[in-house]
Image (cartoon, rainbow, N blue to C red; front, side):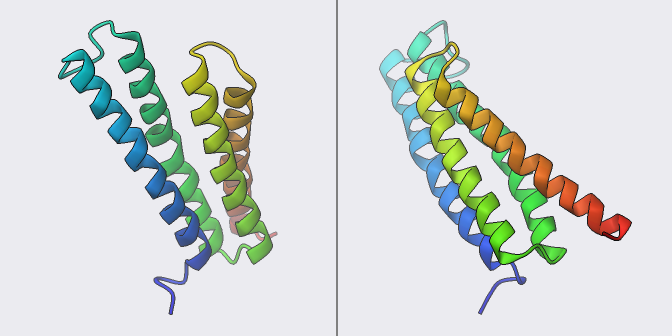
Length: 133
């Protein structure tokens, strides 16, 4: 039995939901270490942890929303799994890349490009379904 007919996006939302827990714990542990309750207090490690978590929570919800809408608009199983796998992989690359360097990195680039691709393809699919393609 599926919830709301969204088994594929539900799978990837569940996987990505599990990602946010260690990212949150990392922020909390850095706050405890630095004894900083709000913002980053100029602590570089805490600031990086906050941005890794923040970037994830800024981009993943929109990607999942347009994936949900694509799946509701009869997106094929192949397309939906491709988008879901790309999103999960992209976020893994991004977390790794941003965790290793606050500057440019291959992981950050791949993560951003993949995440934006998921958003663009899902959004484009939704618009094309409205237009009638």
